[in-house]
Every structure is written in structure tokens, then in C-alpha cells.
Image: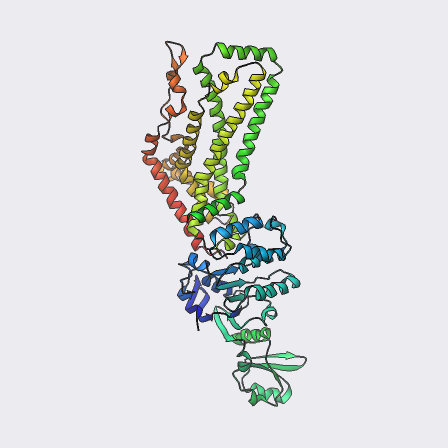
Length: 285
Length: 305
């Protein structure tokens, strides 16, 4: 297996605060990794470290490079969308393409123009004249036209309406993702990317709470809906989190054999959002 | 490296259109003003004819050339003044605007180093802006000469002799080019300072750039009772060692009661060797280099979130 990103004991401090606290993980080629965490969990700081935008302690290697010290080299093979607002508002679409064409060795202007021709973005328009959704389309078209090995998306669909959001992920899968490329994505709208990611990572207070492939989630985690005496029995098996739904108890179990809970209630695999709440709140409890 | 620089500088011209719009606007305004002047003057038809006649016959070539040179110098100074203002605003905005609108995150997602970016902004300030100013000076001179020639011809004067024969165009333009670029080099520590403030400040770059220039001399005066900093900062503009000492008495050849012809040439008043040999010039360039490096460092290391 080839690791695109290898982090071991990565820490980033801001004064006394450890925004990223001794984190280790790997991202393999061809994966779509969803990174989730509450606000202030250290997601953005971790992404910045991966992108070479901030220095950090520990060993971090991205595409075999030190991201902070070899940022220019790295940026030939990485793309990122930090937030939809970052395209400069004064620039014209053609100027943007001209500029990227002259500084980026892996950018195909033809491909970008093809992709843009499928949108309503006019090439003579300035970014400030485009709607938020169109700016995202523009940004995604540019990034899709860059032959990059790793794409990092930090809240790419923030503030977009549902149609643009669906379209964004549709285009991402159809036009960008080809199994050779790797995507690292963070978003609050977990349910939107639940079905497209291959791997999942939770982070809270700068630490990794979960790092797993989507495939193996059902083996490790399940929820049990139960009530009354069954609930007491189930509770003895140590659920990581418990919540009330319509007067029943829903317990989340980690690494417990499903057979042992057979007959105590209705078992199913939790949604990513529920699992996230269980892990974050469970860890806090 | 070179391709990146060219692309980056072109980007500066897209973003900061005032770099060429302002000088072009001033060139147009100055041409319109001189045109309006001619139209107004045309009301005094006879007097104009007399003056042209007088100019053609009485005044010597040297005097006519001197008069044209003074007019040319006036135009050039207006553009130099514009250049100074544009440079202040451009360099203060260059690394501040991209942080304010957060586009810095996009620029940094491309394979361009922080050093390349900051250097492109420095080059725009010390090379591109002066080049535009010189181009505007030349264009304004030419437009005005052509318009005046047409007008004089219409009034029956010999424009070829009165105007074109009287201007040392190349001398004027070379002098404008040298003075413009020398000023940029001489004032480069300020450009470095503005770039640094632009990269550093969280708000109000103009205020943040000028406040220390006023406060530091004040503090020095109060605590040390000296004014070295004030002299170095405010005196610098007047100390440029490019100009030879000038004595107005030398202009006149008193025996013949005429302007000395060789002194009309502007280049004769510039001492490039003395300028390039001045330690103060190189000290300024080093300060500019240090401050630019500091600006690169801030852009690279500061976390913008």
C-alpha cells in the first residue's frame, strides 16, 4: 500500500493550547477520507499542517515531502479548496485561467474550459459578479483540471444551497475522482458525503477519536434500540453512549460481539452522524 | 522562476489597475488643459501672431530650448509626484488586500513560493510603476508637442523650427528615466517598509505605516534630544546625491547676456557616478532588502486563521 500522507506524533501548539495533540495516521492512495470534528477540534489546523500552511512538531510527510519546507513542490501535486470565498473577487475568469496556466505545470486549461462550458460561468465575468454557487463551480472546475494526486477540501460547500451541494459532490465523483486520486474532506454536512467516502476519521480536542475504513465500521460499531430490563442488561456490556428516542434507549457499542446482544433489542449500524455524536459525547462523559 | 515572475507581475497589473489608469488619466487631463489653454489663447489672435513672430525672430535657440525644458520638467514632476503617491498606496495594499479578502489562501494553494510573490510586489513597485511613469511622461510630451505644433502652424508659425527644433527630446527623456528610477532606488527603504507593514498589519495599513515615522522621531527627540531618525526619514527625499550643485548665476553667460547652452541639457545636471557611489543609496537598498525579507517571513509563517 502506498501512503500519500504519513503523520506520526504530530502536534501543533498555540501557546498552551494544543490544537493538534500527538496525532498519528496514514492516508492511502485512492481513498476518500472524511475528517469530522466539532468546531475548534483541530480539523483546520491539521489540514493546514498537511498543506504546509503551518509548521508543526512531529513527523509529517505528504507525498514524500515535508509540507512546510517544500510547499512549492508540494503544491504542484496538491489542490485545496479552503472555503468558497477565497477566489479573489476582482479577477476575471479568463485572467484566473491565464495565471494558473502560467504557474501550474499540471493544469490543463482545455479541461477547465470544457468543464466551465457546462456551467453558467462566463469567461469574461469577474468573480465578484458570480453567485456563491458559481464561484464554487469555477473553483471545482479549476481543481478538476489540475492533475493533482491529493485534493483537500475544507468545508467546500459551506453556504451553498442543496442543489449546488448535490451537484458539487456529483461532479467531484464523476469528473475528479478516478481511483488514482485521493481526497481529504471536512464538512459539517456529514450525511452528504457519507456514501462517497471510503475512510473516516473523527477528531476532537486535537486528538483522533476514530480512524477506520467505512467497510469495517459495521463490524466495530452498532446501535441497539432497547428498553426496560433489556436495557439494563445491555448497559452492563458497556455502551459508549446512550440516548433516548421515543421513550426507548439507543445504545452505541464499540467492539462488542453482536451475538451477545441478540434478543436484547433491535441492532443496526449507526449513521456516521450518530456515531460521531456517540464518540464525541462518549469521550467527554 | 522568470515565467512565474512575469505571471505574478501581470497579476499585479490586473489587480491594481490604478498603476496605469492614474498616469493615463493625468496625461489626458494635462493634454486637455493645454488644449483648452490654446483655445482660450486663440481669442487674442493678434497678440499670438505677434508673439510667434517675436519668438521666431528675436529669442535665441538657447532661450527657446530653456523655455521648453522648463515646461517639460514641470510635466515630469507632476508624474513623479503621482508616482510617489501610487507607490505608497500600491505597496501598502499589495500584501494587505489578499489577507483582507482571504484570497491569500487561494494564492497559496498554487505552486508559487511566498518569496516569489513578495518579490513580484517589490518589483512592481520599484520597476513597473516607474516604467509606467516614464511612459506617461513621454506620451504627454509627445501629445503636447503635436497639439502645439498643429496650433502654431494654424497661426502661421513655423512649428518645425519653433517647437521641434527647440526640444532636446532625448536629453529630457533620458533625464526623466534616470531621475525616476534613481528616485525609486533611493526611496526603496520606504517601499520595503510599506511592504512589511502591508504584510504585517491587521488593520489600517496607511496609519500603521506612518504612525511610527512620526512617533519614533518624537520619542527620540524627547528621550535622546537628538533627531537622527527624523533626518534620515524626512530628510532623505531632499538628499538624493544625483543632482550636481546648481548655482543660478551659472546659467547666464553675463558677458553675452545669454543662457549658457550646455546648462540647458538636463543630463548635465545629473551625476550618476556620484549617485551610485553614495553609501546612503546602498544602505537604503539593504534596508529595503531586510524589510522585504521580513515581509516574506511574515507571509510565510503567520497563521491567518
